[in-house]
Image (cartoon, rainbow, N blue to C red; front, side):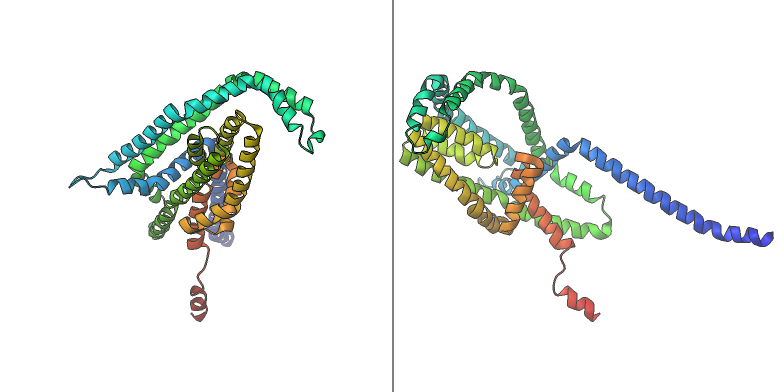
Length: 361
């Protein structure tokens, strides 16, 4: 009887340890599942936070450049540099929307109002093309008239959606300014959750990623400048109205994937349509060729030189970003790919020198 009690006492600590281990695994799995559920429910808020952090990182070289400006012994601090940046962007946008865009919108509005009468005339001209017999012109004419009559209704119904998007844009701007001002404190607070043994290595890795991500704006600015100049040349050759304003709009909106091109091209096509359908065809041919060249050649190589990311990686990042998060995903795809690339290079990729050393030991 006594020996059985001793055996029970000898086994009990091992069984208790196993039970604690199993219980710990269950609690850990439940905590992970709960965290994933919360992240899924708050995915839109987390995405806004992530976008704001990326914008703060990308704009940090611009802020540092403004802070390096000297007027005798005085130079602006970080807060004043952010204010100067926002003031410059706001002033440029105000000048553009006040003087350059209203004439374009006035002509576009006149074209839309005249679309029910001018649509059949345009279709009669298109009907002269060799392959035009295969097109259902009566149905297309009805669609044009329906579009003109329903355009105001569409704008009214989409006001709520646009208001929500504008609220998100305002939140991103506010959070970006906050992270540019207080980003260091938030950054070190996040680092404090990691063990001290790995904290320094992670800090060095993220600083390297920050340096490469900050150069993304230079590459994107190059793409915007190239598109603006090419658009200006083509628009001048085609004698499109308001060529300078539309070229600036094409270049600026190039920073917004998909939607930026859709909005700018829609305005350019409407402006060209006020003169002749030949100009519309010319604009479509130009942008079709340029989009292919930019996607397959310019973007991969410019981003390679600016953020040191392989051309294939840039293309895959753009495709994945647009698929996962639409326009916002495509916009932040390249900086995110740079961050992921640096983390993989640091923690997963093994250097060739490390392998022989490990075998030798």
